[in-house]
Length: 526
Ligand SMILES: Cc1cc2nc3c(=O)[nH]c(=O)nc-3n(C[C@H](O)[C@H](O)[C@H](O)COP(=O)(O)OP(=O)(O)OC[C@H]3O[C@@H](n4cnc5c(N)ncnc54)[C@H](O)[C@@H]3O)c2cc1C
View 1 (cartoon, helix red, strand yellow):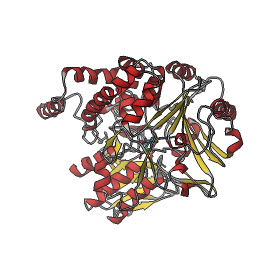
View 2 (view 1 turned 45 degrees about the vertical axis):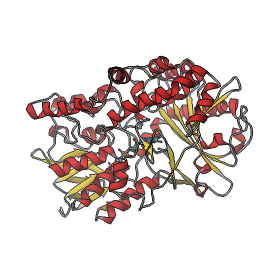
View 3 (view 1 turned 90 degrees about the horizontal axis):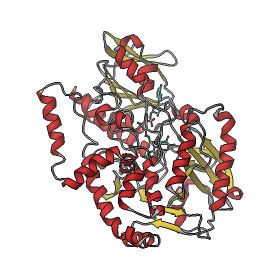
View 4 (view 1 turned 180 degrees about the horizontal axis):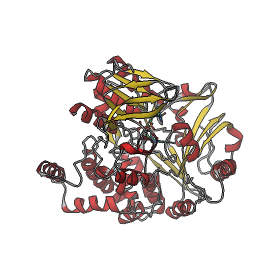
């Protein structure tokens, strides 16, 4: 068993690559083992059809940490983003529509079409969210304190944590507690009266969630999506030039430049453990590779329940891990188009709407009903759709005159009652097209190719348990000091020398690079 590596990273998702890049910068000899033929995991660009380079899973960036971009010199390696403007376009069945723009004054004008009072309140809402986001954001690149605290030094860490709240007023502190406990709908009801504005904002609260806008905890998910930004502007999301794979490629190039070795087509079958310590891995082809440090970019369920023999883990840890919730409810559809959807409410192509995230979700109740179906094991009769056309920013992604459209939708439960995704996939797709047709009647006529990725397909393609896009639900009981499990949120695991560096660790999912960054720091601390 050759031993010329200081650390093995299992999985070349963007987080695994971030860990590798930081370790390599610190002079460690690092080997990344990726099962697929390309790196990136859920942040990839794949040529699905000749000439179409598609961000098959994730499609927008905002959360990627500025520090990671700077430290790893990602712009030098090709990372470039076009900020989305307009941010949102929501057409409504009554013939009206709403845009949200980067220009605050233009957005207020749009909101005032629906409610003058809401337009007046909107700046205060944004300021409030910003204040809270700053506090939470400051935790993204920190290692959660020990929980429950064991001794004096743990208590000191908790005190330091509460110190971060010092700048908040009483009202903001109440807001902070509310945001962790409230539903997105309740939070938005506190601020606004217009259904159209509320639903446009509420979509961020249910993306990737196992819950509807009225489920407790969705207010936090809403804020999670406002935590990033682009070029110093909070809440902006954008399209990466070259698709999301360009993020991963840039990180990989940065890691390689410092000596990291990245092997694709290397499927890890087992993590080797001797006397409670990780000693290496075994690949599918039987090859054994040893290293004193192993970091897993895989989700916690695959890491602990599939790659490690149960006898190496404490019984209660295994029990709790079996209860870790990781079933997804999101579906991604990728389309190759020979034109653009022509909206009834705003006819003509191309238009600013095609540069926005285009929503199909007319009301909070509509989204809640969509969740009701999923709760009982059915794909939503009328799902919430988020449609994006990256080719309106980067025409190199498709042949001349053609477009790519991504549809991210909720809800498509991983576990169906009385049926299977094999049976449901096509009828579900047809229903979605029917739904889009109500708003953009030309949709069927402009589709050249389609790929439908139900949670089952996401699991198969990306190896994410239950097709959960975040490596496990981002509910309060699986966040921060509880991610993935209480007592194990500090990237270390019950197996010495084995670390978790993917989205199943704090601060969770999204193309953020934060878990990878934090895990590298803990590995280097030893
Ligand atoms: C459909 C979809 C849409 C999304 N949209 C967005 C978005 O627009 N913006 C955003 O910020 N986030 C989005 N997300 C979430 C985000 O993409 C993920 O949370 C994030 O990319 C996960 O990164 P990771 O590095 O932690 O894990 P992964 O990307 O899951 O990486 C894990 C890696 O491990 C590899 N692997 C698995 N098993 C093995 C094995 N046994 N041996 C070797 N390698 C293995 C996998 O192939 C993969 O490369 C989306 C996710 C999905 C699925």
